[in-house]
Length: 259
Image (tube, rainbow, N blue to C red; front, side, top):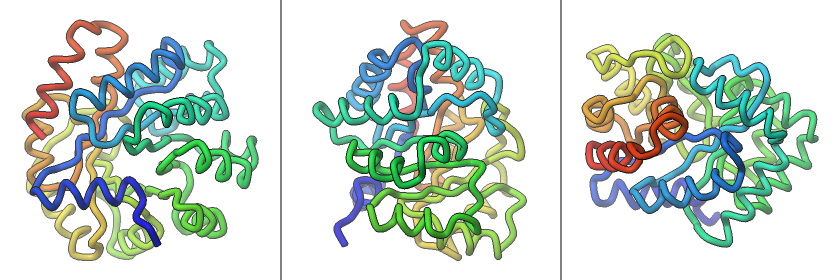
C-alpha cells in the first residue's frame, strides 16, 4: 500500500535526523479564509504537518485558550463539514499533511461513513479523536485504514504497557503522547520520567511519537525534539494569532529552529 503523506513526512525527516514541527490552529477562529492563510503561512515557515482543530461545544481535553478559540469559531457557524471543505480548498494550494483534531460527536452527527468519505476525498490525512478509545469502534478504525486516513491515538504518562500496545496497534501515522495529565496549555516538564515513558513507547512500537500539551517556549520544544519524533504546539500559537499576530512569524521561526 502506498504510504500516507504523514508516514512519508516522518520517514523523510528521519532520513536526515530531523524532527517534525506540528503546529495546531483552531479552524474558523477569525474565519475559515484566515485559516487557509494560516496553514500556508505555517508551511512557508517550516511546519511539517498542520493540526486543524474542529470546534466543539464540550472540548474535554482543551484548556481555556483553545476552548475560547472553539467558542469563537462556533459563533462563526463553523462546522465539521465546513472544515473539510476548507481542507479541500487548501489541496489546490498545498500538499502539506493535515490532521483534524475533533471529538466523536460531530463525526457521529455527520455520519461515520459520510465523514470518512468526505474527509478522504477532501485530502485530510489523519484524525485525532480524544474521546474515542482505541478499543472501541473497530470498524471505524479499519475503514479509515482502508481509505488511507490515519487514526492517531493518545497515550499519557499513566499509560500501562498493555495500553501502549493497544494504542500502537490502532494508531496510523504517529502516536500522540500527551506530556501531562491535564488539559492543553498546561505547563510541561521535560524530565527523566518523560524520557523513560517515550523510551517505553519506542521499545513497544516503531511508529513515530509526537509530543503535545504544554510546549510553549523554543527551549521546551528543543528538549522534547531531542527525545521524540515530533513536537505539537497549540495553545501558545492560537494565543499569538489572536493577541499579537506581529509576533507570530518570529515565534514560529524560533520554534522551527529549536525543533
